[in-house]
Length: 116
View 1 (cartoon, rainbow, N blue to C red):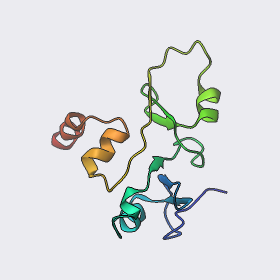
View 2 (cartoon, rainbow, N blue to C red):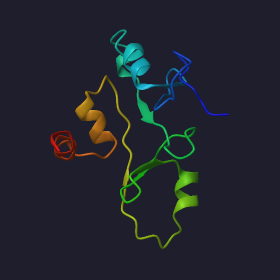
View 3 (cartoon, one colour):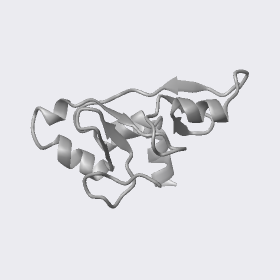
C-alpha cells in the first residue's frame, strides 16, 4: 500500500521528518515546520522516488531520480556508469528554489522551461 501524508492523509509524501517520525507532503511539511522555532529545526529527508517509502540517500543524475539504498542497488549494478550525488538533509522551510536544488535542478534549467 502506498504511503500518504500523515498530516492531511490525502497527498503523496515527499519528505520524512525523523523527529516527528512522519511522512509529509510539501504543503503539510511547511505547515508543520513553520509552526514554531523548535519544529523548524527538525532535520528532514526526501523520500525515494521509486519505492516512495524509504528515505532517499542518493540521486541518480542520469535517471533524474532520488533513490533509497535498495532501489539504487536494484537499478544500478556496481559497474553502472551513471552519475550520482548524495542527497542532503534539510531544516527550516526551503523556498521553491531551494527545494529545486535539493531535487537536483538548477534554477537556470527551470527558468528556461518556463520561458520556452
